[in-house]
Amino acid sequence: MSRIGKKPVALPSNVKVEISGQTVKLTGPKGSLSLAAPRPITVAAEGATVVVRRPDDGPLNRALHGTTRALLANMVKGVTEGYQIGLEVYGTGYSAKKIGKQLHLNIGYMGRGVGRAAQYMLDIPAGLEIDVQAEQARGENEPAKFTVRGCDKQLVGQFAAEVRRLRKPEPYKGKGIRYAGEQIRRKAGKVFAGG
Image (cartoon, rainbow, N blue to C red; front, top):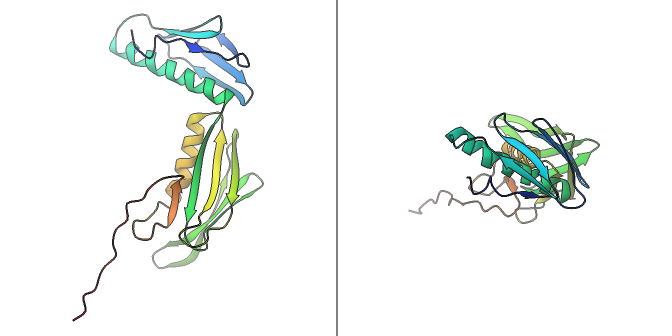
């Protein structure tokens, strides 16, 4: 048996589970999530736990067994505690604002030779919340900060990665969008020797 797959997923008292065929739906204080379990894998509710089983020890079934159990455990954590990822925007004049259902980012210029500012207006997906702690970046030491929150771990991570991809941090001054606490390996600039 898979060491991860054979562990039952404990359900807190405030989480309700509904299983119909291969579909598992969890509802908790932070929202509701559903998972379509792959075909050979079976999911059953036993008391205050959810148990994942596989029919045999084939390589594919072993892989799906552990993966399905891990996804269910992530769903339980998501509907009870939720997930969050902090992002920081470094660069003089850079900013991050939440206006209605959109996240507005002002992150420098579009590219080499293009004279217009890079302003992105991103629609916030349903099920996510954006909490802006600091709208404006001031210098290289005080970034604009915001947090992506939601109950779906995959959705939170995907949106945070898409935002970071808009302006990855560059290695010389560190300008760009970083995850909170991310360390950037800095490069030294060119040094001209005096003659």
